[in-house]
Amino acid sequence: MKPNTKRFAGNWSVQNKLLTYFYLVPFFLRGTWKRIVMGAAKGKLLIGENVVIRYPRNLFVGRDTIIEDGAELNCLATAGIQLGNRVTIGKYAIIRPANIYGGPIGDGLVVGDHSNIGPYNYIGCSGKITIGNNVMMGPRVSIYAENHVFDNPSLTIKEQGVEKLAVVIEDDCWIASNAVITAGVTIGKGSVVAAGAVVTASVPPYSVVGGVPAKLIKSRK
Image (tube, rainbow, N blue to C red; front, side, top):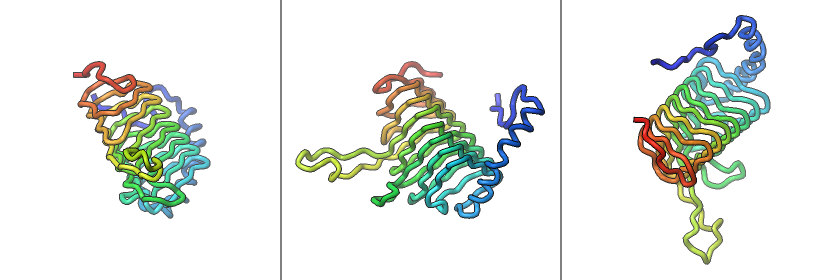
């Protein structure tokens, strides 16, 4: 069965559709203004209130992108921030490949088509983070593509720097609310990460995992 990609699916009334379009007019106007300074934007771009986009020349978005209220995108990354078609960035989400006050520049983020970053998500993409197509993320998901080095006890942890390790979330995954995905992890295609799970090792395709640290609960196959 093909996924429903219509903006208004189900039993939306004509009145509610018109009201929604009316509410989105300010989003459209903000998007029209912001796309002038972005690296590239295709199709409609809707931007909510109090959205912060730093280094917008490094932001490349596909068709029908939505960035909701209060989101913060720091786009200073070697590969920039690249969003596919029909991607939504939820309210107050943070995408941060680098510290805005200086320090090393991170690798960046790639998000495929029809995927979302949920409300209050934290995407720490100093190492490269790749998110596939049709990936769903619940609220307050955190993804980290670096670890602090702490091997030498004679130095402070801050002095020892970080190790970047890429994170990959393959197509058709559901990452439920409050999950944490750590550096170097791959979430295989079609997998489900349960709410509150802490994923410290790679997950085979079509797995359901949960717990701290996350363990295999069952296979969807």
